[in-house]
View 1 (cartoon, rainbow, N blue to C red):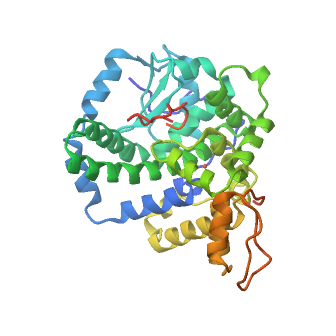
View 2 (tube, rainbow, N blue to C red; view 1 turned 60 degrees about the vertical axis):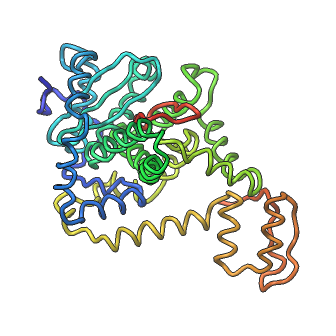
Length: 378
């Protein structure tokens, strides 16, 4: 059986966060969605009723019968990491963890009543100890946030959409829900990346792990700083046509692009919010019931406003200009889409136009295929 205590936890050198609320590390967009869902009257009842339709029991039996359960006797080093992560984030019950044979680096946390964590052999073989510690913390963060419930539903709905694809209206209706859940899912990955950093407390290890997910086990051929520079280049390069392509590329995915995740995590690791948590100042779990939905949405809105203001992406720059009252919208749109400079004829902010390529300005742990499938890995 899975050990539900924290006895024999391997490391006490890392800072622990007693009674920490998941709100401490959740991405603003992820947090506002979760707070709103948790406040809905009858939400728990609806999902418990839905659980009868979901193949959760089948999934548990599948992993129990065809994977290796982590324990003191099997993958003991992963079991130590799991208990340590639960100790650091003060998760009272250690979730079951399985290693499944799959060369694709992947991990996920699923389940409605109780979360279970699954990692692939490809991931275990790819990462070193500290990188793997961040992954385990990432999945424990999903469990603490309650993400496993919504991830299981996304997995179910995605599979259902594939089965009813021959029914046009039925598929459209389901895919609309799936698309919305995927947007939340991507933000939940940024939250869990932060949880992984709180557990590992080694930013370079967290970013090395993401870099290996992108480029494989050739660490001597890669460089974290150069990898982060790719994220900066990706964000600010091109014109509006490229901005639209970025959106289209990410829509079918359950995970943000790996360079983007690394850049988001680096930004958060250098923020005042992260330092305050490390200093012991963070929201407590006992205060969750008093959380304001309005305040959470306000924080989310403020985050998006700041993202638009500081982003180097051409589309976000244009949105910021429009919000700021920039004139000659038609000229700006033309120049942005064609990648030409100038085009500021008239308007209150004439002379402040930017060329098309401009400067300026959070399972999970897997390398997704170009056409994303139904899995919900780290």
